[in-house]
Image (cartoon, rainbow, N blue to C red; front, side, top):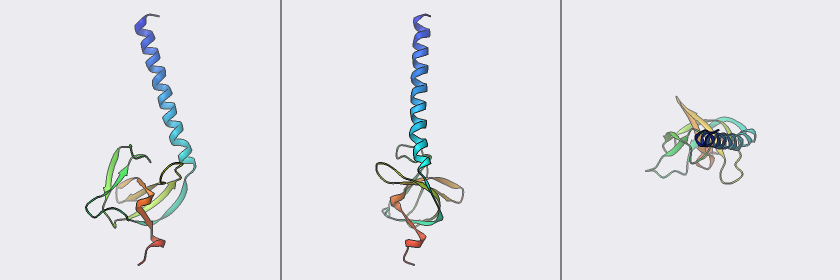
Length: 112
């Protein structure tokens, strides 16, 4: 095995280790989830700001959309976070993704 093949093998193994660690990090959180299946309203967001919708339940995840203050969304499920806030999988129309649960107020808790 020459030096080039050795470097390629090490890089491949490092990539597999990183991929495995990432999969392990997301899976336990998904297992700790709980079903919500009800409407909620976006709250706690400044009038000039928007709540980011993420592809995965993490602040560093790809942004796939956003919601304005007072937007009503359907909350499918949430996951418990060991550090920080829980994340919820929400949907409105064709937009679906994860949001920080601290910016949602469930319909049961709204003063209407």
